Structure formats: structure tokens, C-alpha cells
Length: 396
Image (cartoon, rainbow, N blue to C red; front, top):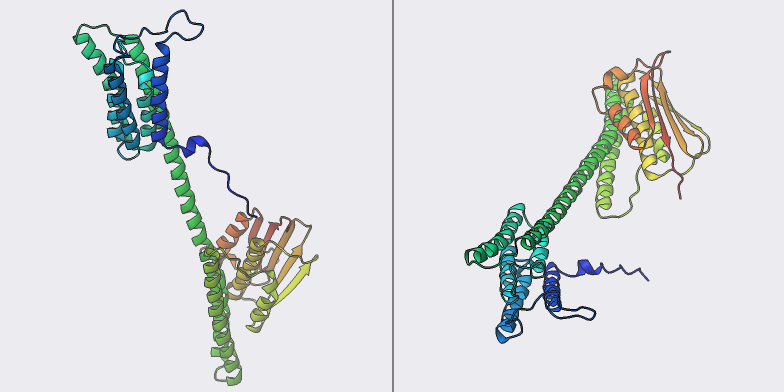
């Protein structure tokens, strides 16, 4: 049976509105407990107001609780309206406590809401919410001062400081999430770019080799068209066959790319196709000698494909630029963790003709992606040498 996914933790299963509602209930419960003598206490922690347990105090509690619960429901859809409801509820609940300030317990729910607003909404909305919260506290103190009543300034400053800290924590969470989303978007863009480069390399490696063979055969047909018509006809048949093979290869590539997009496994080219590559190139007039050293073995698909493309591109460069009739391909299966490739010719050197193209750069990039080593340079004795060393992880 498939493994069942573990449920998310409780704090993620509950919505912000539920947490705000729970914070309100906890704050009101604490306010009531602080005004009764609990076991072990000589007197209550806070002196209860005369109206606390009368009908007006109970009505105020019911009204403020209804406002707080309504604000909790609005929090996700209308955050500022929800905060106004919660602040109003805190002020209403405080009127029956007989205190000189809005106490911390009454401001717990607005503080929790302030955190969620700063964490989940735009900076402008979060700043307005912070201004509303601090303005409510300042307005409460101002109203009592103008009325000549007792004011608990120090306690109110503490409440304001806790609200600011909650806002800063929420804002930090918001910035962290935005940064993570930006990193995900950048990673997705890099993946798309890498895939485009991979497709471009595959197209170049497939088409460049075939076009080189076609050009070689067509040139041979032109040279013997009048003197040896049969040979010219044979060369043109080879051009036709290579063209058809190129179209088939492009079609297979498109099918493979579509299958990869759909998550299906695909079969790609590999070193098993080197002999066919050598035969086609030899038939076009450039002898390709393939030499295998060590025991051939199965390779990971990415290394197998890259190794073949390096050989293919090197042979193509020999056909197009070296001006020689032969080259040698060596596949060296060294220890279990390494594959070495070497393609040499005795032509006039191909580096100067291809440095501005994509051939050598593409091969160098393939090897770098596989954390291998690559070199391409003229040989002291003449000709050109391409060499690559690819680390091979164990195939499970």
C-alpha cells in the first residue's frame, strides 16, 4: 500500500482567524482569573471594578466577544476591517475592568492579528495596521488624560512595545517568504534556461554532423558528375539517405523531449552508436577508426549521451575543417569510475576554424556539467586532438 502523507502540524492546520479567536478567549479568561482570589493568594492580583459582574459588565463582555469573533472571521478577507473590530472589542472589554490602560490581556488578540497581517499582506497594509494599533493605545491614554482620570502610561508603553515586536516578527516572516519565492522563481528560470541550452546543444550536435556529411558527399558528386556519373549518383543517394536520417533524428529528438515533459523515460543516443557514426562518416570519405580500451560497460544515460555527442562533434569538425581523410576515436574504459575519450587526426588543425563556433564550447560545457576535464588543441606532430575525461559514478 502507498505510504500516507503525514498531516500538517496543528499550528498550520488552524487558520489565522482561529488563532486570533483563541487569543481573545485566553485573554478574557486571564482577565477574569486575575480578578478573583486563586488558591494560595491572599487577594486578587487585580481589583475588580464594581460593574464587572453586573449586567452592564456582562453585556459589554458579550458585545466585545461578538466583535472579536466577527473580526477573526474577517481577518483573511478584510484584514484592516478585522483589526478595527478587534481594537474596538479590546476598548469595549476594558471599560468594565476599571483600569487606567488597555491591559495586555485585552490586546493579545489584536497583537496576534497584527502579526498575521504583517506576515501575509503587503507592506502598505501592514503599516496601516500598525498605525491603527498604536493609535488606539495612544487615543485611549489621551482620552483619559483629557478627562482627568488615572492613566497607566508605563503599562500601555509595554503593550505598545509588544505590538511593535509582533509586527516586526510578522514583517520578517513576510520578507523571508518573498525571498524564498524569488529564489524558487529564479531557480525555475535557470532550469528553463538550462533546458533550452541542452536542446540547442542536441540540435547543433545532430544537425552539424549530418550537414557536414551531406556537404562532403555533395562536393564529391559535383567533382565526378561529368567523368563518373555512377559515382555521382551514388554520392547523391548518400546525401538523400543522410538527409532522411537527419530528419528522423530530429523527429526522435522531438518525441524524446515531449516524452520527457510528460515524465516518461526516453531512449537517447549513446556510445553504442559510435560504430554507426564511424560507418556513415567513412562512407562519406573520411575513415574513422574506433579503438576501445578496457571492458565496455553500461554508463549512466547522461554520461553515455554526452560522450557520444563529444565524439560526434569531434568527428564532424574533422570532416568540415581538418582537411584529412582519416581520424581515430579512442574510448578508454579505465577504472570503474572513469571514461576517457580521445579523437585525433593528422589534418591541418581544426581549432582556428571552430573557436568562434559552438562545437568546442558545447563540448567543454558538457564536460564541465559532468565535473570532468576537457582539452582541445593542435598536436605538436600535426593535426588536432580532442580529449575528455568523464568521472563515472556507479550504475545501480
